[in-house]
Length: 88
Image (cartoon, rainbow, N blue to C red; front, top):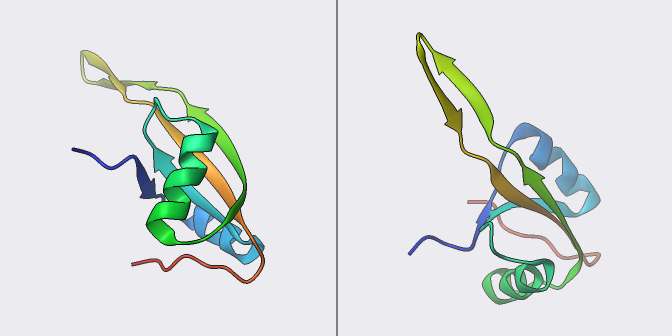
């Protein structure tokens, strides 16, 4: 079973941690309330707000073969002041 929430660590995502915002790759069927609940359960922190972004799939062409890179959903979670999430 794949996890519902996985920490998304890119250079742009890591710069948002100074503002106490963390980016997660989430399952495409999950909503904001469920994301906040999972963050609270997994990381033992209190999320203040959750913003969701749907990243669309993109077409890729390799030689004569054309396909698609899959899209995904990501969530930007703002935490209460003084709380952090450990990055492993």
